[in-house]
Length: 287
Image (cartoon, rainbow, N blue to C red; front, side, top):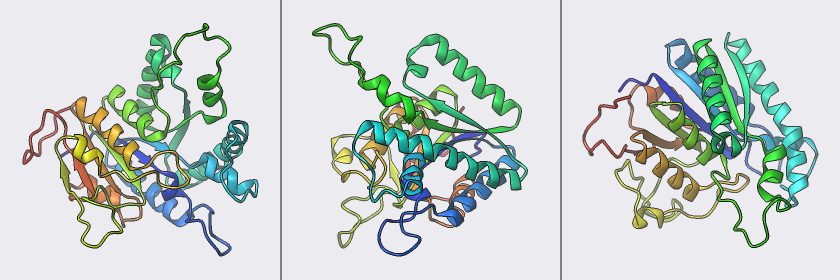
């Protein structure tokens, strides 16, 4: 396989340390984050165009504001996102700059995919950034998007609420990669991939390849993943979007050493979700 353009999504549980006791509990996993940045920079140096979708803004905001847990009130979540997003970008700017890479912040809402003009502008901007050798760092604009989605004042009486396009960065990354014609989506979390039962159960087996996401596969998802809004069910729904578009998805553990470089080199890590146009056993990916 040769990847010319990939989308990499980093989950909150990759960026942040596990909650618990100790001075570093719940804080940013700086060494791990910088290691992933190094891998992205290495792929970039090899000519691979990388779009990075990064969660973690709310988690960083929670940590910076000294809160004991993620708040539940919408306005407090938005405040955490506003505080944490600037910290998140500062971390990426410093890490990528040390490796000679230029980055750009891209904050999106659902309307950027709904409105044809905004969608065309988004595609043009991302293509321009990639042509200039810039690595886009993408996140949902939590500071405003929740307000836009929950506002009911302009909805006519009796009208159904607007259907959601995405509610987390898993689905955002799936939409992004299908609309920007990337070759693959790599979803990095704190699990090795999809298992045939709960990973904590004895004898749990990692599924290396999934050719179709049906009811049986969906039944293997087990709740959310803690601080993030996603979880395995969100990843499977996102994988189905990408598979239906004829693209490849890989769910892998962001803590696996050199995970991105090994995936790009063709090593079978995590769970690979095959494009609808590719049968099991085939290895070619057509752009």
